[in-house]
Image (cartoon, rainbow, N blue to C red; front, top):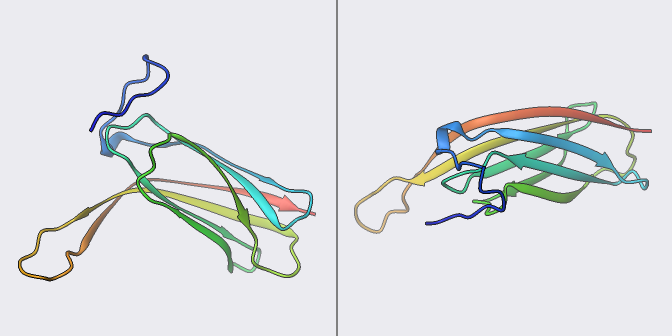
Length: 126
């Protein structure tokens, strides 16, 4: 598969060298949504990612899965699933690759997941 990037000076990296470059969170004024920016290195093979937001009590209040992205720079809004928002929130992003292992017959092949990077950050809603 050929993947082309806008900047010819960016050299696509093999899966084990791809890293998260940017993980930012910007809460919306309503306190219920958060704009997430995730940027990764140029890649040869499309990576997947899991992003999770936890509140001060450590409960997951938002999560998203990105499966084999075609873009290195991603932006999306996550909605916080709690009635009253506020305080400090933790965001974790995990970048990984998954491969199906071959099996015989009609069995569903198990997925082999290889984590290549993770990054954490936080934000505050007043």
